Length: 76
Image 1 (cartoon, rainbow, N blue to C red):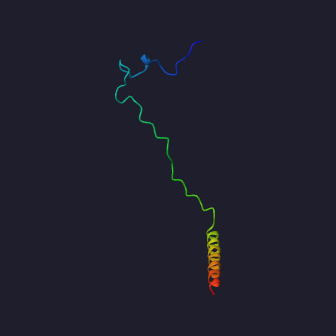
Image 2 (cartoon, one colour):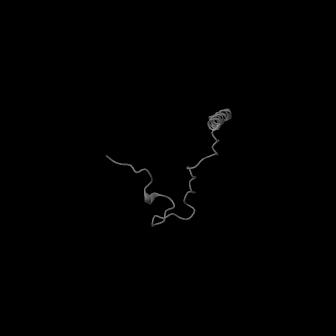
Image 3 (cartoon, rainbow, N blue to C red):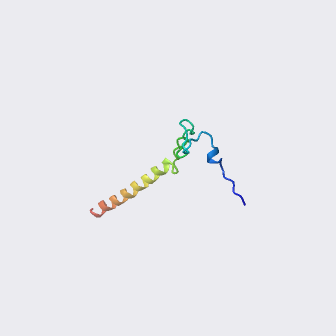
């Protein structure tokens, strides 16, 4: 079973010097970078509407006012 090499034989490759090095200008340009984002990512939307924050805040204030009223009622 014979195995074929994927590229040309080193001695048959064009533009190679005797030591196997390439001549200036014969190398391909640097490849583009593939890591990183191609465009800015959008900000995710809010999952809880502002109205829910207002309602929870009012409930917390109501509970706090209830306990403050109870404390003042104990000292009367």
